[in-house]
Length: 223
Image (tube, rainbow, N blue to C red; front, side, top):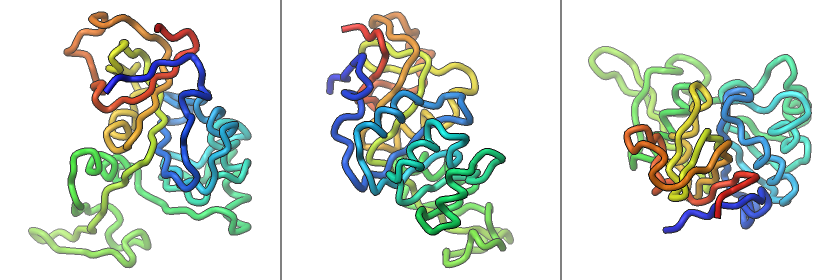
């Protein structure tokens, strides 16, 4: 498979269907694929399920996608912050569905999807409303909750650098959810700060191998 490298965000998100599950990377602004999110708003796909660390802040990026009425359900760890008024308004008026997922579980459920794991037991959430309706089991005297993988139709992630094969490296904490989202999605679209020739990234430093990457967006992409 040949990775598509484009300088058009519209081309990068082309074909995303209504009803898709979209994994969106980022922790705050670190690793957030902001231009791809804007392109997705312009593209028009709706009835989306979004998986992200939070539910957007302010009026831009993920919050703008929610405000546009494109998201049916969001799965995240931190839906409400001081400036999460877009999500708050939608949720209180019944216009968006929320699945609250503890942050470690969120990452592990996507990692499980990429690793082909059918389900796993985790102690997080035991004895709380987050465990209601889920299978529980006591293992070696400790209670666990059964959690299932989170698969994505698409992943929109941010990376620091890509080569022309599609291998990715990240910059410090901007890595966050990018690697697990790339493995959990059918189609991975990466927004990068730099595109380099093959051989310019040390194979030992590659975090996300090209086999997991389908499209690269960079405003001055190499061809």
